[in-house]
Image (cartoon, rainbow, N blue to C red; front, side):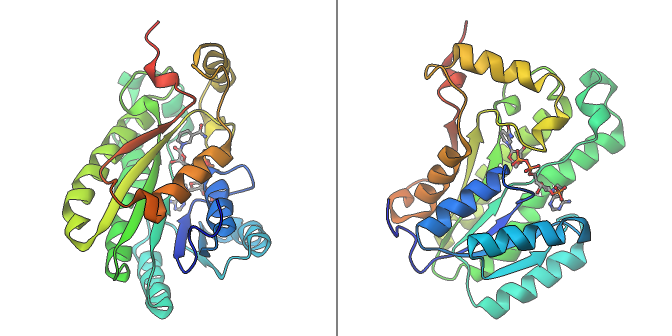
Length: 255
Ligand code: NAP
């Protein structure tokens, strides 16, 4: 690919470190000529993401905790200064560690609501911020996982949050389609990241994928980045409301 995204401005939420799926997406966008705006959550991550942003050639690096309305207002103001945005990548999820370890039936009300707020509702909240900035149409995308539609050991409350997220993708696609704003999810196969470290037995999940997936391997984050670049590009213009599997084919296997 070369300069597929020339002239496009991309807002990418969820770069925590070099292993983040959002980092691979930002790398692919930059390689294809997009201008990058990155966000981080709180002062703890400021320096790391500013350094990663500098290495990626990001134009701006902004603070945004997606559960904080004041942060969302500040994000709105910063984007208004930019004038327009062509894409928003939502690569964010969180659940309490204990809710990813004990049986799903034990999930507390607070833990359930927290997972929904950070991992699902935030897509709706940020879509509302960016949609008015997508004056010539745009592409919103989020990251999901097979645990939304199948039971995956220890995925628990996050699986339920991902199911709501995937449904939100469809409702947002229907709402925003008349403005030529497309909304899609990329369902990534398992990758060792900080978020994945919270899932008990993650290494054995990776092992099963390597053994059973049609491609007999786990995915690389660059494959998610390239899919995101395709979705944002002219080549992806007919796709909306979709969940695109980037999982080396694992989801097709029954037994
Ligand atoms: P990651 O690097 O840990 O990224 C997760 C990001 O979410 C971090 O940047 C984290 O920021 C951010 N975040 C959490 N709460 C936030 C909040 N309130 N406000 C703003 N940001 C917040 O892990 P990842 O695997 O790349 O995860 C990215 C997305 O891909 C998630 O939706 C995940 O469910 C999905 N996904 C991952 C896999 C996998 O196997 N890794 C597979 C399929 C889908 P902090 O670090 O500052 O908390």
